[in-house]
Length: 471
Image 1 (cartoon, rainbow, N blue to C red):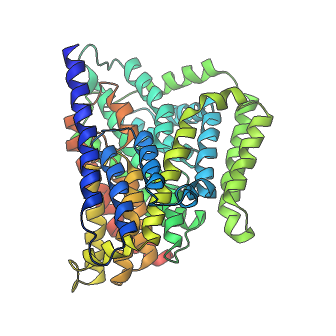
Image 2 (image 1 turned 90 degrees about the vertical axis):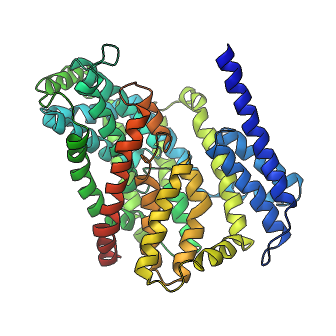
C-alpha cells in the first residue's frame, strides 16, 4: 500500500511539473524571429512531448490535453488542430493495425515463424536467425513493432521453456535470455526494412514531402535492403558472442516447432486468404507509384477482403481500442508538428542548430545529425514522438547545409527504428520482452547499447554508400 502511495505521489509531482513548465514557457518572452502563435504552440507541443518522456501521462492523455489547450487558447483553429484526422497515411496506419489482427487471428504469423524454426532452428544461433527472419517476413503487414512482438514473444517464450530455460528456476541464461534479446534486437531492423513495418515510417515519408523528397514503398525497401541484410547477419552472431546462451545446440527446437505445427493442423483456408491478401497488398503498394494507386485505398481493400471472409469481424473491431487510440494521438501530434513547421518554428530552430555545424563538410554534418538523433532517443519513450518532434528539424538543418536530402531523410527514418534498443523503454516492444523476466534492464542498457552502436555503424557506413548509389 505504501509503495502504491509513493508511486502515485511521484506521478502527481511529474504531472504538476509538466503544467508548471508549460505555463513558464507560455509566459516566457517570445524569442526573436518567432511569432507569439508559434511560441505558444511550441510551449504546448514540447510540454506534451516531455509528459510522454518522463511518463507523467500516457501519450494518448497528453495529446488530448495538448490539443484542447491549443484550441481553447486560440493558438490553433479547430480546423488546423484536427487536420491530422484527414490525412490518408494515418488512416493507412490504423487500417494496417486491424489487418495485423487478422494475421494473428488466422494463425498465419505463427505458422510462418514455426516453419522457419523447423527448418533452421537446430542451434541457438540458428534459432536467433530464425526468429529475426520470421519477424522480417511478416513485418510489412504489421505497422506496429509492439503487435509483431505479440506474435513473436509467445513463440520465443515457448521455445525457451521447452528447452529447459526458465526464469523461475534460475535458468534464464540457458537459452531464453539470448533468444529474447535477439528477437528484441531483430525488431529494430525489421521495422527499418519496410515502410509499413512501423507507424512512424509513413508519417516521416509524408513529412519529407514538405522538403520535396518523394519516398515510395519500393525505394524505401531498396534503400534499406543492404544495410538491413548486413545487420541481420551481424546481430545474432554478435549477441551470441557477447551475451551467449549456455545451450549452444538446440536439436529439439525443430521437433518443438513441428509439434506446434501438428497441433495447428493443416493450413486453414483463412491462412490462405490472409496470405494471398498480404502478398497482394504488398505487391500493389510496390506498384502504386507506377500506376497511381492510393496506398490507403489498397489497405482498405485488404481489410474488406478479410472482413468479407470473416477473418476480421465487427467483434474484433470492437476489441481494437488500441487502433482508435493510435488514430487520435497520432493525428493530434502530427497536426501540431505540421503547424509548428508552417508557423516557421522548425526553420527557426534549424537555423540556430545550423550555427553549431557551420564550417563542417556535409559528410561530417550528416554524421553529426544522425548520431545526435540516435543518442537523443535515450530520453524518449516513444519512437514516434521523437520522429514527430525532431525529424523535420534535423532534416531541415541538413538540407540547409548541403546534405543530400533523400539520403538524410531515409537515414533519419531508419534511425527512428534501429535506435530502439538504446534503453529498456526505447520501444513499447521492449517492455513485452522485459516483462518475461528473461532479460534485466541493466542488460538492455549494456547489450542494447552495443546493438544500437552496431546498427548505427552499419547503416551510416555501408548503408550510406548504398543509398547514394541507388537513389
